[in-house]
Image (cartoon, rainbow, N blue to C red; front, top):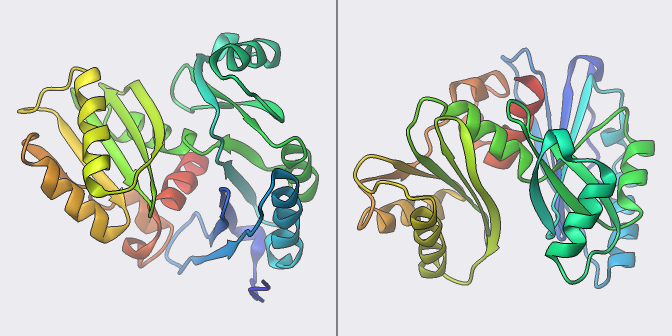
Length: 273
């Protein structure tokens, strides 16, 4: 599908892309602020890994505005298999071995994604052709695992919080990050069928991180209706369960930043913090 965007002054703007199995989301924005960002979503329809790689290429080439000369380009790729590792030992060889020992089937190319501001990296595997395609197609892209931007945001934004958990909710998947005083405790992605399922997963993670239900916080973002409902449900057990307030830094990305998807906000803030 061709989105036929006419983007001007691209050398002053930045491109943020979030890719998962079903879609490519993008945001074109001026990091200096006071402009309106261009946001969109391109469907990726595929039944196999090989078809998905081809459809990803088509999604990019059918929308050539994505290939303009942007000042920076940051791309988050969703990967089901991943592990957290200390950055100092996150070599390609060790990352490959750890993934193979952690999962029964590791396919494709292994790459490591640092979490800026921490000593942790995420090692993950993506389909074999994806990383070379992204590197040769886009202009010096920063490639990240999809959880790296949210982990970076949480470790930075909640650095003074004793304990804080963030749940970013999409239609049928949620991303969960827990921190204590800016230190990463947990990062995970989970599929869910109902809000009750998601509340159960969040509470289980809350207990495993030994959070305090009377003083620590759990914040929800993403789909507006679902984040409101989940926060309300979690308040039965956690005193400070509430929707995430829009970060002040997001206003530099768009004058109407309240309407921006939180995954793209976190991705842009990763590049610009």
